[in-house]
Length: 223
Image (cartoon, rainbow, N blue to C red):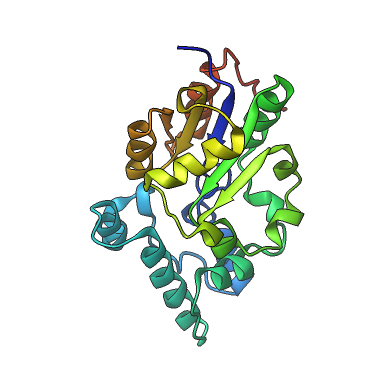
């Protein structure tokens, strides 16, 4: 097997911090009292039966976030019909603050080493809005972005992985795929891609594991 040539990343949860991690900022942005938002997904599944239901495959990730968006809208006396409204209202002040510093370092290091970079997302523009791409300089390092907002083919459908492989013009074994959802990791493995199950509770270790595939080591953050 030849060495990997491309790092393929999910966006939400891998490159960006999850909304669970930024409840305090969301509450400030929306004028909600501290600790209003109590659902914590993977950080405390016992607080979030809806998350557990999604992990069991009973509802989709899109359905989960649409439900949460509508709940937050109702707290403000508004009717939010999409996830984009929640993200735009919660994160419009400083979009760059949602990027994980670990992701920023890993992406820059991979780019500097000559590694190809791709994003394979189920809902990048659907959830975050089209303006986000212009507001995040880190996205300039990516050779391609395959977004099911437009392709309508969601991970773990094998066609989603084949699309990004086609864009990169690489074989599956030449790509390392990183995602925080097990079903998407299983889908990539089924297509013979190398995989890293991203742990949102320990992003540093997850990116270190991904970079080891390329013989790279992430440097520590600046003091």
